[in-house]
Amino acid sequence: MNIGYYPGCALHGSSNDYEQSVRACLGALGVNLCELDDWICCGATAAHSLNHKLAVALPARSLAIAERDGYDDLLAPCPMCSAQLIKARTALARDRALREEIAATVELPLEGRTEVLNLIQIFQRIGLERLKSRATRSLNEFKPACYYGCLLVRPPQALRFDDCEHPTSMETLLSELGAAPVEWNFKTECCGAGLTMCNERTVLDLSHKIISNAAAHGANCIVVACPMCHVNLDMKQADIERHYGIRHAMKVYYLSDLVGMALGLHENELGVNRHFVSTP
Amino acid sequence: MSNESTNTPKHDAIEQMARELARDCYQCGKCSAGCPVGERMDVVPNRLIRLIQLGHMAKAAAAGAIWECVSCQTCTARCPQNVDCAAIMDALREFSVLRGTASPEQNRTVIFQRAFLDNIRRYGRLNEVELIGRFKTKAFLNDLSIPMLFKDALLGPQMIRRGKFHLRGEKVRDRDVVTRIFEKCNQ
Image (cartoon, rainbow over all chains, first blue to last red; front, side):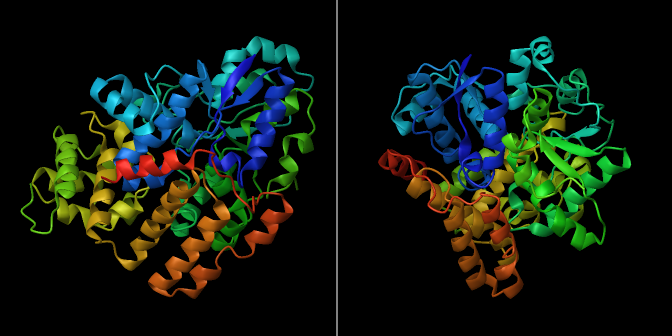
């Protein structure tokens, strides 16, 4: 299966462990990722906070490239990217004048045909039965708190994925592979996202609450499908522990890490050895 | 329109957009109730929206709250009137930055986001090392905070050890088109 791939800046930068994981896991499933030629940054929070035109034009340029190169589907494993791409696509679909204006701005014809998929949707597309048939190892030692954060499910008006208040797609997937996901309260609460550098206090507070709630409900790890959630919950966990004087030692996996392990891949092939919180 | 004499046509366009977005709000307060950072806000989201409805855009945009907002989209997701509250927060930030009304502490976020966009304008993709360098330098010149300057300094070596730093950064081939997109969007 060939699929268009929009890595985004994080997966080509400090979250390259996520890219390693996604590539290894999907590779084992026979999915060939075709990286979008000369893709540009989606603009992320900076664009939508400071310039509403850029917030549409930047993702629209990449959508137009995907369309030009004939991709029907585009995997964007970073939810910031996928949400920006989908929001742009939605805005363009309902407004012909805007579509023409943006096509002129990004200097490529643009109809908004390419469908943008998150990581969970790729697994759904492959199919649970096929995943199960390829699994060589049960995930029965894992009791994950499946953490969706914000942009996998919100705003539902644009994303139309799962239930935005009580999503269960990751739980369904991981249960099929033998894991025992816990019920908990913070699966769609925000971790503070891109404010890590400039408003750390907020990030430490929100992420501490998320990890604490997962632990209180008996989780032995948290599973994410977002590079920013991973940064705040994993890389910043030592800072959270120092700030609150508490030891969490909560491992944080990408969804593709656990699926990959079920397929028989070693942790190191998936980049798990490059996470900050290590197995106790 | 607010009758602020400092408003430019660009301000007026953003205010118009914000008023349009805020039109259907009937003040149920669900946005503020579900906001994960509401307790840190000086003016909570439903009150910001009311200020916009009453024509006090500049007052709303001067609230520190708009820089506490984490853009989690919970307000938008839960609004019974389909008001895109998160987009209103964006409009307030855009308005505030045009006006230059952020306080030094809030200004850190502005500095970060400006440095981020400047980076994208030049390379088409994010160069994290350069972004961090620029942000730290400019933030230090803004508030002279030494702890802020050295915060996360210890993370650097740990990230290098894990192969997480891309020292050179990536650039897209067609950087001219990126520059032109920025020019058109800044008009």
